[in-house]
Length: 281
Ligand code: SF4
Image (cartoon, rainbow, N blue to C red; front, side, top):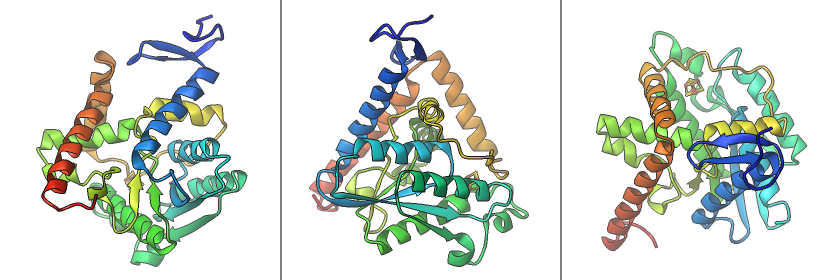
């Protein structure tokens, strides 16, 4: 039996980037610690706040909602509302929506569902017709709708279930394309990157995807039968994701380094904008 590096219990995970083997209890502590760090940086949870949580029927957003409820279990001044988006992807989204509603009810979080069809008069299935990949449009419409709804319900923040891998992938993709506008469009807690009036936060930004999934599996937060999106065929994204994962396996910690470098650039850019009077303090 492989033992936990912090106690004598059986290890359930080995983190190559930290060199640590952790048992279930210390693994949960570690995930909560990473999440708390990201949450602290937002400054949102220090006082009463209403937080819209984007629930997309996958394990990451399910883990995020579960962790938020767990970490803030005693905070009566915080209000969470789960927002579900139906992009109109047959054979995929209905299962995710059912699982998300069941989870929100299990965690006693009010939830609301909005559809692309009602908001934009079209669906991702329709956009996909004749297109190589509808992902860019799908993402933009989803973000826009999430932000609009969060604003309408008076939320102070919108929480997205993006993991370390998601962010590192986006950052890496924009770096290798030399796309500075794309880089600056990545939402982060910096006030310069708010969407509308609602601050976008990513509580899982320091949690690797594999750990978010393990957390979800350990807590039986398993969306039923939704599988993979049938439109996830963006060749560049798949190649970038694969290359980055190969690099990470040869050089553990690469994804954290990408995130740190991006955060540093953002800080510097924020300082410059702040000094130039372009950002509110
Ligand atoms: Fe939308 Fe692409 Fe994600 Fe499918 S994989 S839900 S089309 S962004």
